Length: 140
Image (cartoon, rainbow, N blue to C red; front, top):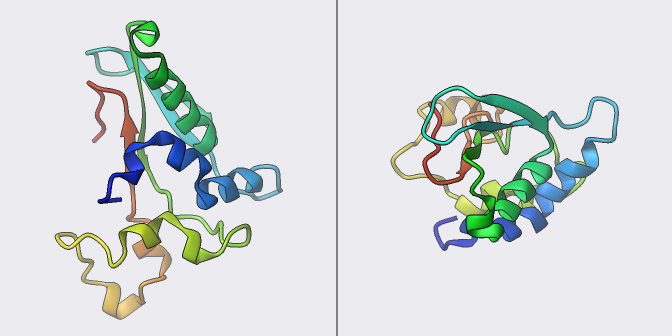
């Protein structure tokens, strides 16, 4: 969020929505995994490792906490995480969601379909992404 909370990966790890997503992984038809991408630093390509959002955020946080000790020549990122695309609300109230922390939204990225579809429509929710990554990483 704009106040800087999202810069602290511990905040995201303990966030009610991330915790709700984690609980859904053990259920049939539960939450889908994300891809933690790993590539050689400064190179394109690499591999994607499926894991829960909590596992990915925790891995990135531990590496950040290690500082220079984590410099193994690889860079990791969680690219374009669609944090609000699935229904996780059965595990936590929607008012506890990450999207509530950026309400009313990003002023320069208003969706023209909001009036037609309503703000809770799945199309609008699928356009909400968070990029979390180590220095020198990026996604397209």
